[in-house]
Image (cartoon, rainbow, N blue to C red; front, side):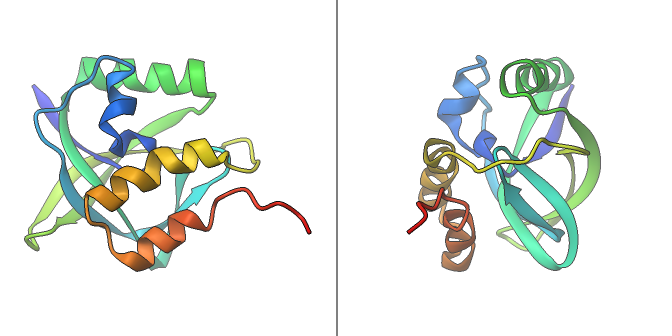
Length: 144
């Protein structure tokens, strides 16, 4: 059985998913209202009634999701837990999905490489310009 899952960080990137041998049949652009994205050093969502987050919905099995989030914990250092959400697709359809959110991530600056792993596919998927600017705002800044 496959479960629709909303991805918003580096997991919108097919190359990143391939690193853990995941190849979704399809990835559909969707928007999640009521949350804002933070990247520092990993992507995460925080509740915010004034914001929306863009990402993709992909159908994966529970075993695939387990493998993906064990990788997130053991390799990336982030413990993400599933939460039920309602996303809106480009064709204005509302759909239930799982979304993995970390309760507590160590803070820090995002590496430009990590931000690139999100921005590149976000551009290719046609995310809105304002949202691309939001993602770009997490790039490391060199003090002057």
